[in-house]
Length: 150
Ligand code: DQA
Image (cartoon, rainbow, N blue to C red; front, side):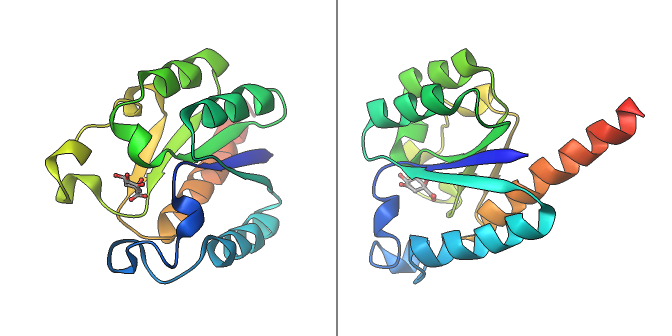
């Protein structure tokens, strides 16, 4: 299984960006750990990050036939990007929405996700662990599918 880990705006600045909210770890540190977990599961990960809405949509379209799922943290686009929501529906890939913080416990504008309805699930509030849990969800979901098919 190959998965795309796709991050939205300013997630490249993890470690220096509001560390009280998003933690002290850099994205490179988080990604390295995630890659090690993926290797243990026999999963291949592709990593990408874009600050622009179009960049995220282009990445989904470009990778749509080369991955079996997407771990997506759309950053603030979560809350208002209908274009991203439509792109997720268009590529018809299973997408798990992840957040480091718990948006519902923060400012009101973060309480709504316009992309959640196009995703298969959502993991939020566990810091960097949110990505690990999404990876495990994909692995266990694939395992469950194999058992059902037997
Ligand atoms: C975030 C939450 C969003 O509300 C925010 O705009 C981000 C990060 C998170 O991972 O907690 O950029 O997606």
